Length: 467
Image (cartoon, rainbow, N blue to C red):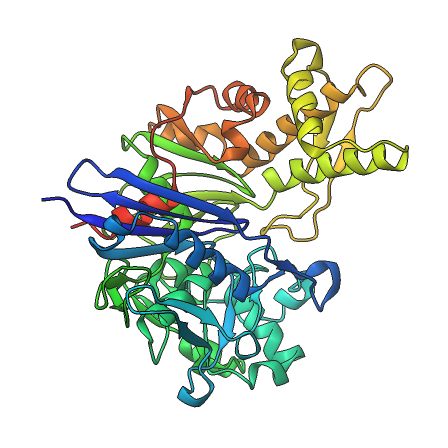
């Protein structure tokens, strides 16, 4: 008998949804996606990074409504994943509900009441600089606290803008909020995957560092309840775009975990994802998190599925850095009096970068967005001379620099010790860029393949069918 599960991925730049038939080898029966264009100006200047929650939820409603009604009516579970680390706030007071149901029977959608929710402070938020992070108490966790982590952002808000927090009594990731809306939850629920991504969460005991946080003046009443990934967060409170009322909704998952789940074909694969940011990860067989304070390393171990952990090196610099380069070229041409679409810029530099003549000794350190282990790091260019400043050479060097930066966080020797035999590519930033692909294979000395998996929304659906 066919079993249909709806998977939703709330990404940094887009929303993607799919219906997976888990009784037929996890076949994707329907798929839809939409760019959210949800970024809003930050009240802290260039260091902040915020997104509009109303716009994101509207994109989710639209994507789900575009799926075939005959399949939506057969959905038996809903799995939701998305961008980790970020945090938003809302109030669950019945008289001041942060959402409302709109529409007719069997075609209900949930709309956000803008003035009753905060913005989403994303993983790209850099308001917590090195000096501020140094004032925070050491966590009882193997995961270091970094800027962009939900707990760090809440600490910053509590100390710098307490009046904003006073308006709310709930917090969570954007996925936790959406689940609260769909299930009309009184108290938000998150998974151990997303709790770990906030920091101050002990993965050995599956508990927040309540005593440490309370002593430091953290508003612990805002913390969501934590359940193990795979458990049910709640049940659909009404018919939603033809999905039946009462359909179980799983607790939120991390997008990296779901991407790996849908991509891996062997325990000896490592997944390399380059989209907005960049990550490389693999299942850390036999890993047990230490109980002491976090280790100073550039890779991290996060909860996966079935009580396993994944080793992940996550760079803040990926497709976003390449996009910044393209926008800069476009702006330069505009200042020279010409208007060139970004698509044309991409088309040209990808062709130029593939040419063997683009290989040069120019070195670009592309960390213009910093890194979690080094938030104050900037980008730089070395070894410039008249023979290596062609456009193709610069682009090729930029791509090589991105891969070198990721390799510095997770060298090929680590993969060798884990007996990894190939890299499975994921993310449009990698799949559409053969220049990046060449640099990956050159540096890691492993085959790079692209499989039929890769969508985090598919992984979100698959997570709800795990034993």
